[in-house]
Length: 436
Ligand code: ASP
Ligand code: MG
Image (cartoon, rainbow, N blue to C red; front, side, top):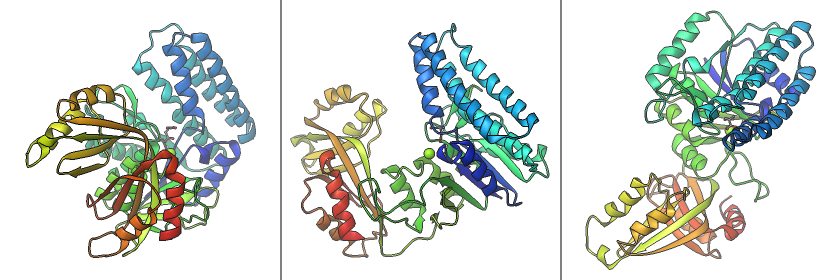
């Protein structure tokens, strides 16, 4: 069986929902994972924020505005009286719920329950639409099988067992519809897989049922070889291996959530990136297969902060790096890039929440300097050491760009540059001109 995931834009209007239904209803059994309609999760975040600020009337104003949008969708989507009635009741029920928080204490639990409404609504509406079309489909509640553990990691054994149960309880259905993003945590409370987490849902389900393929349907025709917002003439990359795709997803290619690769890779399930607006386009296939001896793509990750620690104590010493890394670890701050010399080490982070405390402690180890507004430019491809020339080609392309750090050798799939944000566009263009 295949798992197909459709993102917010793909189900972003009545017309789009109809297109998705047309696309999936080919008689082949499948699991369909849906995001919330585009804009909904952002609105829900805002609504929760009003509640946090004790401004229930502000929240309710936003709730009402969002609710109205859904009634407009209903009007356009359904024709039968029964479906219109059922959908109206569905919307009324969820939005009534969103208004119940007005006088309650508002904590992260209430927020997560609010954030879950978008996917519950989109899938409920979609199922009603399939019913109206007379399709043999059923809604599987993600809250009954998708679960994270104490460390907020997916509980894969639980997911596999309960996903199988759900399928057993609904035999002979052609289309299984379920919510992306939402789950329960270790304590059984409503939780989620983080923003953009619907891709993760799809790949976790794919792994749980050992799917033949995981398809991620969005509004672009695959992963492009450079950022189309900054470079003209980019094109989709037809094949990426899991490692290349993970690097690209992590370092800036917005099309795919980075967490989504691992479950697919561990179970060797191909992931196909496809375009709802252009279903016949080949898109990108992520699998064990890739283009040998080629640079595949370039991506950029914004909002990076670089920290350099210089210390004479590092010279011929051991244990220095451990002390540095421990400081980041104790502040739960992941490090992206690392470069070292005999007398200093530079690292980058993108979460600066605890930067002041980190710098404070690093100062005990050496002289610390911080550069904000940096960008990581990541060049991805088959960069095995024996494929000579590719690294120098990438470095050569950057000849006119002030480069703050270079990193190669962490994997055989990427070489990364750290540059200033203001040089990003020029760097992406230079790489494009030189490499593709
Ligand atoms: N609806 C969620 C979000 O906007 C999850 C997703 O779309 O993947 O982040
Ligand atoms: Mg997404």
